[in-house]
Each structure stands twice: as structure tokens, then as C-alpha cells.
Amino acid sequence: MSASKNKIKKVFLIPNELAEGTADRYIPDVVKETLLSLRIIFCEDARTTRRFIGKLLKGKVIVEEYVLFELTKNTTEQQLVEQINQIEFPSEVGIISDAGCPGIADPGSLLVSWAHKQNIKVVPLPGPSSILLSVMASGLNGQSFAFNGYLPIDKTERRKRIKELERISKVAGQTQLFIETPYRNDKMLDDLIDTCEKNTLLTVSVDLTGNTEQIITKPVSQWKKGELVLGKRPAMFGFLVV
Image 1: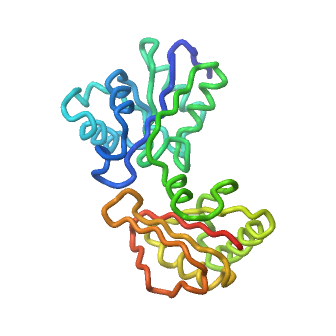
Image 2: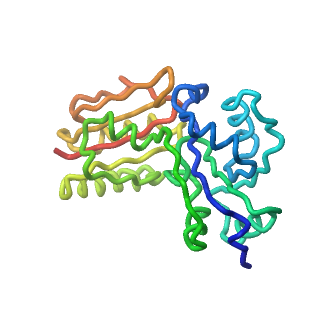
Image 3: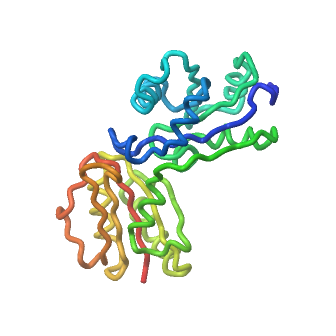
């Protein structure tokens, strides 16, 4: 199934807040101005997106007037095209992730890839990214780093993957970054302490931009189990073999 490129004139990548209630501090005015000019939004979750727009624009628009299309990690290209074909008039559209920047450890690349194939202009707007904020504040190598998404759930496989990434870091001098489902954060930290070499620099960035933000980098030999309780707060993990 094909979609007319004329249905979409431009795609804006709109950042969301990382921590609840921080939009006023971390979402720039250009994002608010862009949202005021749009009425069609692709998003991960319609309910949370309407709430975000309402809080950000504070009554300047009627939130219900926005047409929202849900675009998740499970959306297929055919489903995306079907959504695009529902757009009635040639329009500029936005895409919003549940947190951070669309397409960076979040859905969004499917729409962006489609837009490039159709020679449609893509406009990334500035905003908070947990990956970049973590690298900036870690003191690790910011010239060469890799984001690896989620590590295996199985403990044995997870520790095997940690050792593999540590080997890559040692050979390439490259910072290795990854995330975990929040309720497994503390188990991940324990595995890193048990598995990594003692001289490996381990960084943990938790609740970035939030009131309980913590960013700690030190050698694995100086980390002790239980000294940092992450709980279910969003966390980014990274290390560099030195």
C-alpha cells in the first residue's frame, strides 16, 4: 500500500520531558511554538501525549482538536501508511515519544525513514535526551560511545553480554551505554559490580532532570552493593575500560 507524499509536507521531531513536571525548565520555546502550529501528531500513547501538550501549552489550544496517531515499536510500515492515508489535507505533522527525543531509544524512526524516502523535510527540535545527558555528565569518552539498548533478561546471558561490551570498550576505548526495565535496575547494578573488571569506570545516571537526579562515576572497585538504591526510577548505565 502506498501513501501520497502530499499528505505530509514536513515532519517535526518533538522532544518530551524526561521527568514528570520538568517541561517548563527543559522543553524550549521553539517546541511550544511548533506545537501551536500543528494539529496532527504521531505518538507512543495518545492519552499521555494529550496530557503533555495540555501542560506544555497551558490552555493556549484545545487539546481535543489534535488528531493523534499512535506509533509504537510494534507499528509496521503498512500500518503507518494506512495512518498517513487518513490525513485529510496536506499537513505538517509532529512526532512525540513518551520521554526524551523521538527516534533515540524511542519509536519514531519508522516515520522519519518514510519521510526521507518521500523527500519530505524532517526537522529535529532540541530537547532533553537521557543518552546525551548521561554521556555529558559521566566523564567517560564522549568522542566515541555506543548505546546498546536493553541487555538480556537472563542473568547468565546478561553477564556474558556485559563482558562482551567490556571487551569492546577495552579494545576500542569506547564508552558503552545501556538501559534496563526500571524494576530490574538494582539487579543490573549488582551484576555490573560483580562482573566488570575492578578498574572499569562505571557510571549510573538516574532520574535525569528530576528532583532525585543522581549521576555517579567511579571505578567498579569503589562501588559497593546497596550503596545506591535505584528502585524504579529511570536509569542509564555506562562504562569505560581504562
